[in-house]
Image (tube, rainbow, N blue to C red; front, side, top):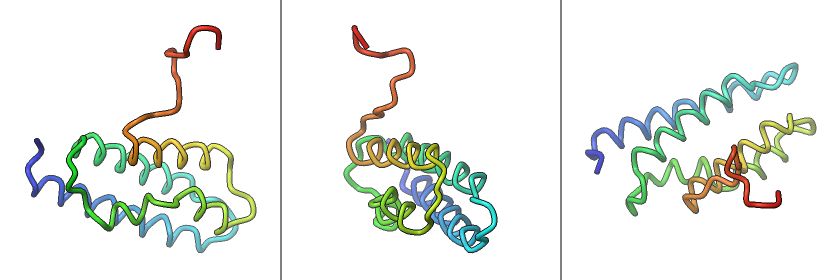
Length: 109
């Protein structure tokens, strides 16, 4: 089990990157994939750290819950790779399951 202070620190880092991503979205010229990728990487670290601990940070839940819908509504043209990664992140966070098969495809697929 990860100490609470470490989870708190990771949660703050996730939220800081979430805010950075939202600020970067204000620039309508180019999609902020770098900021989004940084946010996703930190969320993955957070998920790994908390594991199946039922006590997770509410603000992190709010950032992840409905992420795909938020991204689709926020802009007309969102790179499909961003939508796919957001969908994976939601599934991993809320179900503990990564729907992206990488070499682990079921037989016949």
